[in-house]
Image (cartoon, rainbow, N blue to C red; front, side):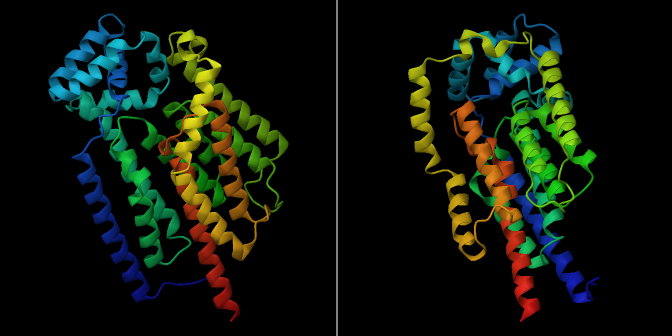
Length: 360
């Protein structure tokens, strides 16, 4: 057992204090520059629908809200997007019930509809920063923890996530904590509950979660504490799928909404989306992460039996499966897995340095 000296304790406390101040400062600055992305009016429409209990007049009420709360130039863009869309598109947003509920709560607390859509993202960003420090300090010294945590919070995908009117920041918080709990070998019930909350935030998280469950079942090292048995894999998978179906049933107006012709696209459009996907992917954060993995891998090898390699291969599989199902790339959809990969790389580097120091 190792004990912290007084100087180590003071260094840790001071580093954490500086980090907290920096995290709050960044969050405050980001709050002054909301993204007002294209999803915002549709989430506001879902909140108004939930308030009134009916879809009657929701589009008109949403336009009134946008006209009141946005500059004229922005209002024209969002109102046009909302007016031109088929009402069935709201099904795509209704299936994020936890985010819609949070927006409604913040609006009831006195925030405008527009600001209420961003507050969950800002809170999610702040919570992500706290979680990263909490887990990283268990494996690295205070200085490295400060540098790694700060780096994770100032990369562009993380900064962008905090400014958007989407459930992605909250989704990232739940997923990242679940993955880190898995990595640290914590109670299975806790991270499964976080998986369920992530589904309530974004129903499509169930796909990534099922892939991770499969990876835990097939984990190549038998003494890993979180390795699943066949019964656990089937049981957890059925639980996640059941909750996803329940969320869809309770939130959507039509259970098979995704089969509506509005959401289908011709083969030519799908092929064009694939072409655009590869162009975007070339400049994505995933490619930076992939290059980092290759460079760091020359020293340790690329065997799948090493946990750092195995976990990155799982993350790569997630990216590929999502590409097959939905060839549209944005870093915000996968940020929890990218942050998790960065932390795993840093943990492995820290463990490797300790091993080298201990044997020299």
